[in-house]
Image (tube, helix red, strand yellow):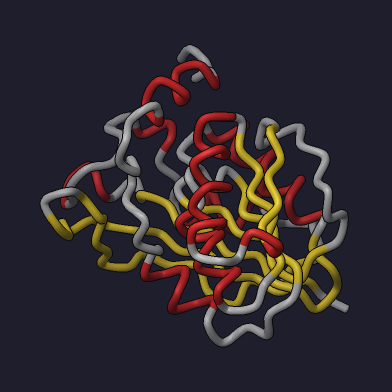
Length: 206
């Protein structure tokens, strides 16, 4: 399959409204609320709904995305709600990024739906920047969503499974706390729609 480009996403984000709304993902809230605020990377964070929510909780967040349009909207949103000083933006690809914050307490990936080899690279690269004792959290449309859920990609190659996500962290120094399917909901302009979601929470040993 052809690699999706930043130009493709720039065109999608070049609208007045937020493509995925300003409402933070409920699984990000559920799994990240108990964590002590520190430094975070939101990888492929798009318009920054989860980054801004983390900043409101006291985190210093770096949103790394390859769409300059999305990051401009994120920065404007952070300024609107008074957390701009805690919100960094870095234009970069998820597999080759060099963050401004080299070591963070939380690495977040929300709905980076990309082919398995690319996703594995992104997860492992993010994991290298998580400090010992820090956490990596991810949420995706699951492959099971093809049969029983709403929205999301219809290509199984960009829909991870529980087994794939666990294997992506093998040998990376993480203990998987939870990796499983959840009955999820996705935010649309028409409200919440049901979906099948896969979540991953892991802690770096040390």
